[in-house]
Length: 195
Image (cartoon, rainbow, N blue to C red):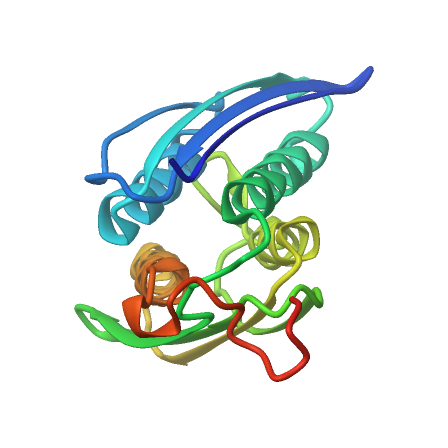
């Protein structure tokens, strides 16, 4: 069973994540930041991942520590659930519309963390989520998940639509990349023999 349970606790935050890669898209997300909850629910639903996230942090200061630590904990959950990455498809990509917005996401579960994030927003925040933290969340996720993540916003006017297109594209790309490929017969999808 490709599942993981992560607890990340610092003096600033406490984050609990449970992840099932072979799920149905069920979720329970409580971060204290409504827009972030909404985006993580999109990741679960469209990635068909079963995700529970309960997080508390020093939101009286600002959202930075909590958003970053959720990204790190969720990335670690993906890394742990993938194990040695035997038999996975490894690569995934998607281009997703959300009304006028259009986003591209591509993933390589290579074991080498890297993120190239090209997204811009008009507003400083969407609800209680500062838009500057959205790329930082994605970078933290890829770093702790040990995968390469490329995200590009191709079109869009409404910031809510922009970020939702990004998370849906990432969900579909991760869904493709994490799926088991039976033709690999349990081998690692690399000529090196290891990811």
